[in-house]
Image (cartoon, each protein chain N blue to C red):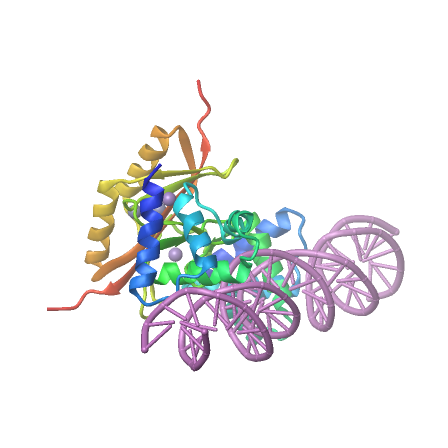
Length: 143
Length: 143
DNA sequence: GATGCTATTGCGAATGAGTTGCATCTGTCA
DNA sequence: TGACAGATGCAACTCATTCGCAATAGCATC
Ligand SMILES: [Mn+2]
Ligand SMILES: [Mn+2]
Ligand SMILES: [Zn+2]
Ligand SMILES: [Zn+2]
């Protein structure tokens, strides 16, 4: 897919434009993130990056993830397993349903829920800056 | 309020009925939890329990929290600050709005959102076992 | 009320994700 | 091709939470 190359280029240009050095390690991590279609944690990303360039350290993975999160290029999720999980920000906002048995993650978006959330916050005198909606479920027994 | 005494009694009876020893430390922690109207973390509960009985250790607070959570007597929340926060389960299900500036927590419940969540899960072939909805917001500038 | 068995406790050490200090290395720009 | 500030790897650290273990104390029984 070429969407991943574009995404990688966007990551790279963003750093360059901000005067942040585009190091070998960052390039590798950027590429790994651009290609990720799941919700990997830091360690998983470290393994993927290491496979490409063994010089990438876990510290640098963490530092790069933090950097990209601060720049708004990636998003951090904290599902129930403790670790942070990451995904690209260039897709439309969505929420997640997690299969309690397999850990599989589904994405969905409900315009209605988004609207209701805003209404609820407004009633309390608040503007929503961000939100977290996670459904934890079990496959419905087929009948 | 007498609701707290009832709640404490329910906690205590539950342990007793399950053949779990009702120790001094557990009584103190149970009482502190029964009286909590906020969303305290383990350390805050430890401080409150210590004030009543200095013999209560942080380990025992953690162990008791885990015990009560497993028995369904209290609920664990993981807001964005890393620590787990706890509250009694005997109130109706609700979700939370957190003030990003003050940390203040508001509770709300939307029947419509609850229903929409179930519909979304059903479409994906799932039953929701639990869910997490947290809104992080800023006070809306008054005009 | 005393006794005995074993769950529970306090303590300190361990864990695990994530961060940080520091000496060394390397992009970047002149 | 330097020069030099920013970036890196490594090991040590943090912080919430868990765990091993010897000592303690519920609680059922007498
Ligand atoms: Mn996603
Ligand atoms: Mn609550
Ligand atoms: Zn959403
Ligand atoms: Zn809800």
